[in-house]
Length: 504
Image (cartoon, one colour):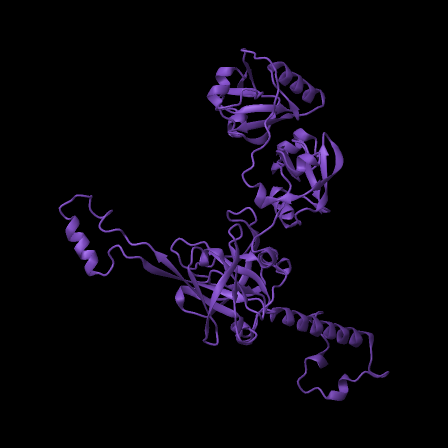
């Protein structure tokens, strides 16, 4: 039986004469034209797929050769105080104390200070000698020495550091312009793209490793974290080195690894260049970072919080507290959900923190909030985050009289504040709210983290100072068809919103 998918025999014949393929009025038939067109399309598609398959370079040698002169090894030196004799080895006054002191003196240590060295990596970003590395590479260093690929060394001075992103900026003075590399746009990197890491792993110097982008937008522990995850080998000593894309642009600064044994297992993290460039620009201009400050405490909008607030989507940043500062001056209130900041839609708290930090200090921005189901646009003039660190939220004041009765609902046993309870909770004498006396361990409230000693100051985005006001807010939520009610809970002064079901 003939296979209808097979092309005409002339397309499979090894002895076909060239003129047989020529298209003329005499030999062009609909079937032959169909197969010739199909064959052309297959060839074009095959070539296209082969081009995509060649995304993996045959060699990284040309790229490595081009950018190696801009990558540097960094050696730091720190003076460490002497051990102070045998203390810590034998108890003071022990008969062995003199023996151990004599032993240390023979080793040349004794109480004398000694120098400790550490190794790291970095890269040159300008011909006049600016060098980027990690803060932890140079932290506490008395001397910083830069070794270049060509073999010469130069001392470096520290321009500034940012512990929040673990970035440091150094400067060397060279007689000739230095070879440097440029930052690329880390947001254009896709999972699966090839990348190359360079640095000084384990003191081996100018070592190259390659891999792919394994994931993006990773957060480790920092407020401003935006890490690129890669399987390119990164080890101790690679810290501060660059992560390149295939165009030779720096899209990350190698910072950390995840490993059970301290060696590379293919899970490395590089701080994204779009974060680093902003930090470097500020360190170069001011010698320090100057991040925007909105002045609110926020939390993510969960599904149950969204339902209790009447929101269609669990997006935005819920304001749990507004201390004295820019946001308060601009009219932001606790219970507002920030949905847009300076023209950028807010997905969650992590995004908002980063967007605010990247905004210029002193800039007046539009902040769009959802308040009681309605959208409002506020204007806020940003402060500086570094100056505001450690400021406490404003206290809530009310002169509501004390009520000794208790109320059990939603798995909570609640009591109005008394002088005794205020003392136990370490509250100001004017603090108001309902104290959580006990929590049913089988309740949703317990699952969501409420504990005895918590203080409820709001319900349904309205202040509650007594049991009657809480009951009123619960009745209002039920009348509005809500399945849950939003509570503002404070513990040790730190606020957070919790949504509890009304049926419990």
